[in-house]
Length: 297
Ligand SMILES: C[S@@+](CC[C@H](N)C(=O)[O-])C[C@H]1O[C@@H](n2cnc3c(N)ncnc32)[C@H](O)[C@@H]1O
Picture 1: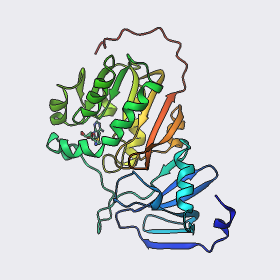
Picture 2: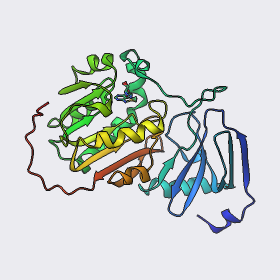
Picture 3: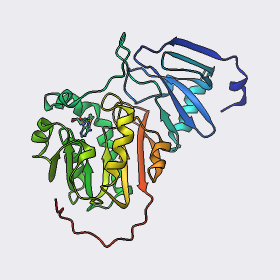
Picture 4: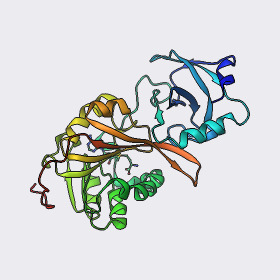
C-alpha cells in the first residue's frame, strides 16, 4: 500500500453495537484493513467494501469505535488485488450478529434446523461447494474418509462424492430430522451433538467444520467443540473450516489446537469476491499403520 494512505486524516466510526454487525477487518501482512459488509451477515466481500487502513479499534460490547485512514480512488481495488492473491490474508469478524434491539448474540438451537430450509441452505453454500471441489484434490487423498460433524442435509458431502467417487462420507448432526434426510445421501450417519460423537478416535482423513459459525453456535461452544471433534482426525489429517456466516474461531485458535494453517481465504473469480476458507493440517506426524476403511462403530 502506498505510504500516503497512513498520512491521511483518519475517519471515525462511533456507533452503538446493536446493529447487524456490518464492519469487518482483513489482516494482510503487517496491517489490517477495515471493510463494511453489504449483505448483513454474509462473509463474501468485494473490493468496493474496503474502507481504509485500520488505525485504531477501541470497540467494546456496547459501542463500535473504529478509526481508519481512508482509501481514495482505486486504492481499494489495488489493496483487494494484493489480499486476494495472498491466501494467508485473514478475514476477521469481531462484531457478531445481534437482532436489533436485543442484547443477546444470535445462535440457533436444535430446533432451528430442519430440511424444510434445504433449498435456502443449499443456495448459501453454493460457492463453498464449488471451491471445495476445485481444491479438495490438492490437499486430500482420493480415497479419504471424510467426516462432517454437522452435515445438515448432507448435500455438501454428497456433491463432493459425485466429484471424488472413492471417498467414504460420514455425517453427524444434532437434528434427527436432518439426519433422516441426509442418510440417503451419505455412506454413514450419526445423530448427536458433535462433541458427544461415539465414532472412534482418529478415523477421519478429512474433517469439514461448517458449523463453528455465527448464528449456529456460541464462540465458547466453538472453542469447546473443536478439540473434541479433532479427536476424530488421523495424525496428519486435513481440516476445512468455513460457512456462509462468519467462522467464530481465528487462525490463532486453530494453531492452539495443534493445526498448521495452510490457507485462510479463498477467491471466487465469478463474483470477484473473497471469503473465509481455512485449510489446516494436523501437526502430528503420520506414523501409524494404515487403517481399514470400514469403521468399527
Ligand atoms: C452445517 S450448519 C450451517 C448451514 C449450511 N449452509 C448447511 O448446509 O446447512 C447447520 C447444521 O449444523 C447442525 N448443528 C448445529 N450445532 C451442532 C452441534 N453442536 N453438533 C452437531 N450438529 C450441529 C444443525 O442441526 C444444522 O443441521
